[in-house]
Image 1 (tube, one colour):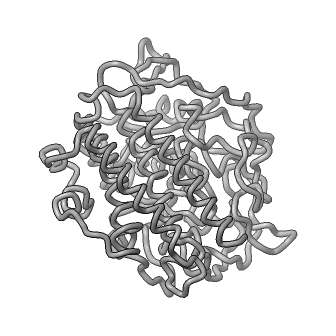
Image 2 (tube, helix red, strand yellow):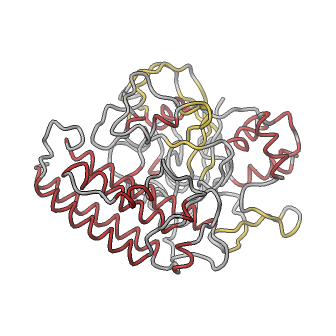
Image 3 (cartoon, helix red, strand yellow):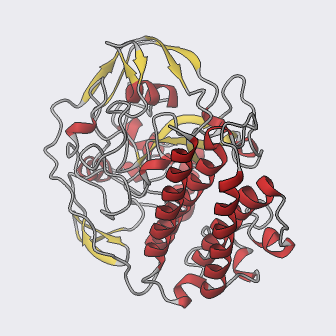
Amino acid sequence: MSERSEKGRIVRDLTEARERTRWLLEPLSDEDLKAQHDPIMSPIIWDFGHIGNFEDLWLVQKLAGGSPDPELNDIYDASKHSRSERPSLRLLDREGAERYLGEVRRTALEILERVDLSSEDPLLRDGFVYNMVLQHEYQHNETILQTLQLKKGEGYRPEGQKLPEGGGVSEEMVRVPGGPFVMGTDDRRWAYDNERPAHEVNLPDFRIDAAPVTNGAYMRFMEDGGYERPELWDAAGWEWVREEGISAPKHWYQREPHDWWTVRFGFHEPVDPLAPVVHVSWYEADAYARWAGKRLPTEAEWEKAASWDPERESGRLYSWGDEPWSPERANLDQLAFRTARVGAYPGGVSACGCHQLIGDVWEWTASDFEPYPGFEAFPYRQYSEVFFGDRYKVLRGGSWATRPGAIRNTFRNWDFPIRRQIFAGFRCAE
C-alpha cells in the first residue's frame, strides 16, 4: 500500500471510530454521562475526554511537540487518578469534550499530512502510533458498554442487529495435537508490546471444549450446589463468594425456582440456556471447571487452539484464517448487544474445530499475566509492564462488545480474578 493510501485508510478508520463513540453516547443524558454508575467504573464523560487526551498526547504532543494542557493531561491520565477519584475531578462536560476532541482531531490530521510513515521512528513506521490510538478508542467503546450494563434507571438499548441462529456443536471437546507452535507475534504495526515477541512453545496433547460453556451447563453446576461446595473453589475465591454472597452470575436472579432471568442494559429477560454464560469471574470459571472434572486452559493452549493450523504447520491471525472479520465469522462489533447461541458461527471455526473463540465472550484462562521471553515495553510502561504479576488473570478472544480492529488470536486482555463487569465467559480443557 502506498503512503498516500495508508494515510487515507488512517483518516477513514479514525473518523469511523469517532462516529461509533458518538453513536454510543448519543442516547445518554448529561446526568448519565456525569454519573459514576459503579465504583469500579469511571463516569462515561471521563472516558470520552480520555479518548481525546490520549489522541492529543500521542498524535499531537509526541509527534509534533504540540503544547500540552497540563490540567487536561493530569485529569485524563489513567495512571494518576483511580476510578474512585475521577468523579471529583474537573471533567469536561459534553460540549467541552466535543470541542476538545474536535480540535485535537483537526490538528492530528494536519500533522498526519506531514509525517513520513516509512520513517525509522518505531512510532511512525507503518502507522503504528495511529493504529494504537485507534485501538485505544475501540477499547474504550467496550469499557463504556460495560458501564452502561451497570447503569441503573432507564434502560439503554439501541436497536441491535439480528444474530444467526445457533445449531449447537457436534462434539463436546476437540483434541489439539501436541508439539511446538509459535505463540505471540513480531508484528509492530498493530500488536501491543505484551503480544511480542513471537516465541516457540511446546505443548503436550490436550483437549479443549468445542464451544464456550453455556448458561444451561452453568445452571447444572449451580443446581448441583456449585456455590455451596468449598472443595470446588480456590481458597481466595471461596472467601470472596462467602463475603460477597455470590450465588449466580452477575445480573442473574430467580423469579421462581429454576426460572432464571437476567438484566441486560436495564431490561429483564429470561436466561437463554443455549448462549454462552457471561459476567462470571475467574473464580467462578475455575470452580465450574473443577466441578466438570476439567480445568481452565492456559493461555498458550487457548492460543494454539485458536491459531494453529496443523496442515499448514503455521499460525492464523484469527480463528478462521488470515482474512479480515466479516459478520458471518464471529459476533463482534457491538451492534448485536448480546451473545449469540453456541454454534451460530460455523464460518469462524478454528482449524482444530473450536467454535466462537473470537467474539461473544472474553474467555478466562488459567494463566497469570506475565511478559513473554524477551519482552520490551513500548511505547510506554503503563500499558502492560506495570500490570505483570500474579494479581491478574489473562482473558482471550474478545466479546460481542469488542470492535474487530481490537482483536486477534495474539491479543491479551487481563483483569482481577473477582471482576464480573467484563463480558467474560470461559471454556474448559483437560
